[in-house]
Image (cartoon, rainbow, N blue to C red; front, top):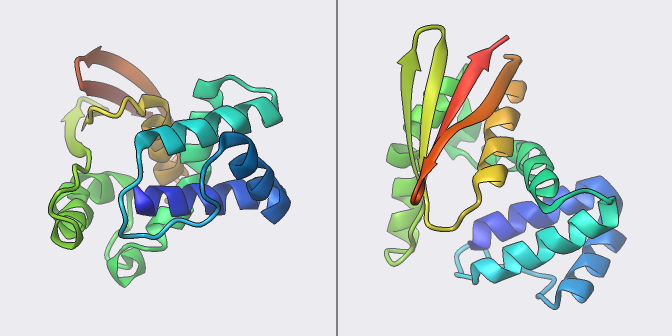
Length: 173
């Protein structure tokens, strides 16, 4: 969760500056600085999101979705070669496990990155997200951010959730 916490810091700072990040971490009772390669409890992420939601007067799910959407460019900026080989969100999402998450496992063998799978479904795509962390709204925001980044308007909705697996339907608009 170190990388995600760094990206969350960048996202909160983008929304409200360094002062907001300082206020959020103080109120959440979490560190202000996170190392990319260290592991942090998921409770740090949730504590930050709860405070951000309160400060923005939105629900926790809305804060997670907004956070994911705004976090995407920060994550994409860390993609090997700056993501130069990707020209659309679908191919990038389809490669997450083989490129980024494989690298995460190499850096930190005990880590448990989420799993992603993309399947065409008529004119839509089904994106299967597997993770025990329960960050479905954050993932939804990341997906929205990915499609927005590539200039492809899309509607992303939760199709189903069963245990640790959530399936999103992505409809290109």
